[in-house]
Length: 125
Image 1 (spheres, rainbow, N blue to C red):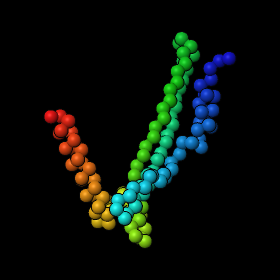
Image 2: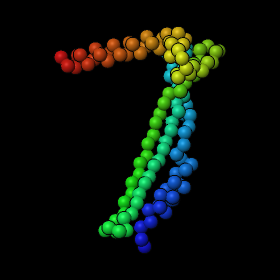
Image 3: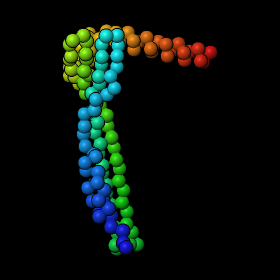
Image 4: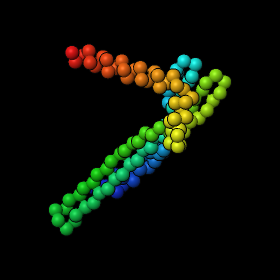
């Protein structure tokens, strides 16, 4: 049975058509004091293929393909007390708004970074 690149590519696309798409994914919640942060991510997948033959030369055939994925933060759900807000990461001043709403996050992140730097320095000494 001869190799039919086109047939194989079509079969691959048919099987992966439902899988390769763009989805919004809800991340694991992060608890900071009395505030809950829930990240929202946009996940995209793609697939590309190509191939050809050279019947005039050495009867050669060739083909190739590739798959790619991308994850991008889109928003963060902030739950503080009884209030729920969605802060868009891509919106103008979205990150600044998040910092204003949750100053404890900045303190926690900065504290963790300082601790990591301290541990690294101690390890190097």
